[in-house]
Image (cartoon, rainbow, N blue to C red; front, top):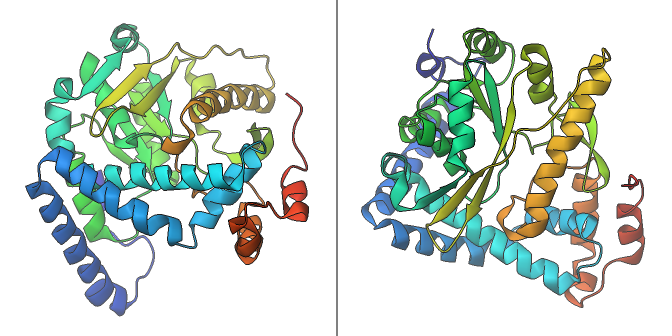
Length: 341
């Protein structure tokens, strides 16, 4: 069964309300959004959606997750500085949403708006006769990361979490069609396809910045965070190159993709230790990107074990925060457990 067909297979039992009411309504809303923003020129769609979301997002409760995470990662920043970054984060996210209906055009005509730095590294990936892995994060317009494959006519078999709504997932798949390669679901079903592609010398693309409860604990901004080990385990198994692809938003709906040098790793015979060592390197790469442009990362992920509870406590102390004061006890606790560099 193809990945397109998988979209319409309910992997768990869905209620009649979901199937016949909720999902169709969500789909109609998504189609309406896409039509409105597709009719607009790309620059206008990006600007309008960025404007709307940056004025709505900071007022949403989920923004306190972003504020807590930033306070944890950047203890030197004031509440005012963090609030400013939160607004810019929502602007970037809104622009990404508004650009989504234009994704197929952006992919086909990528040279007009996307600067690709070091395309020779992608060409080397295509020509070395080996499988390979590229990785990125939810940063800039993260959908652009896959477009880097066009620079070397690569196929990227992309691993990601399918939307709960199979109708909306069909819409997502439609906009991603112009990037060559298969869309692979996380889990056992996807792993079978991954193994097949890797055995055939294929190339995988994945985002590695989200929390994975059954992953491995790896430092991120100095604090242990549950991280997917798939990248490291596959790299070790197939002894293949691992190339970071940095996605940056420049001005408006213009972007830069940088293919960085492949990460070096060694196999000592201790698979767990070797995987962790490689994921530490990968997380360091992400951390460097985020430190340089923190407003372009998706800080609303509950990335650390205390992100959920910490954000709820920060929300309760929001009056203190709005006075420009970090809640002393919460701030102190947020810095506990920092791993020495």
